[in-house]
Amino acid sequence: GPYRLIGHSFGGYVSFEMERQLRQSGESVEYNILLDTLSPRLMQEMEEKSHSDLMFEIYSLLVDHFNFPAELDQAYFDDLDEDKYFLYVQKKLQTMGLSFSLKQVKGLLSVWETNRKARYYPENQISGENIVLVKGRDSRAYGVDLFEQLLRTNDYGWNQFTTTQITPVVCPGDHFSILEEPHVRDLTHLINGIGNDEEVSDRKETVPAEPA
Image (cartoon, rainbow, N blue to C red):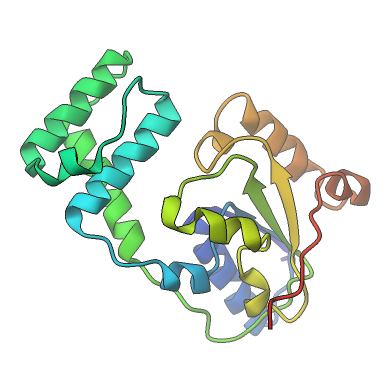
């Protein structure tokens, strides 16, 4: 060490657990960046989704991300079997000039479903002093059911798992586009500026006290 850690989405759990184990082994961590990662508490509170609900959810994300000219109708997806669903999504992607095979479309749903079902809960708290939570300014990646809750807790619930408050900051983009041009340039600038109090303070959010 000192180690520099970073993890996006579920990868934020990996980097948090790495820091926990490193500190437990007496190692030092210079910083740990969680890129738009919900806390384990919020993930546990997410309601279970049926398979058709998950298919609708991932389609909603694709519509939002690729700006599909399409109206969303949950009932339409309830009547689709998997094969028709995959063909439907593939054709929508093709109309946007995006070449996805059926295998890739199925992979998208499989990854999303696995991510939704995965659970992680730290064994103990660690210091939040060197943890920076980077939030996508336009993030809507976790489903409409949690969006209002996300707006109410700007630390995404992470302070429950740290002995000191983390530093939440905001970068342009959503859960996915934060890693794409042009937003990734802004993210890179922020990462390079970690340790520069002025750079971080410009983007810093104040974390409100947890409601009683």
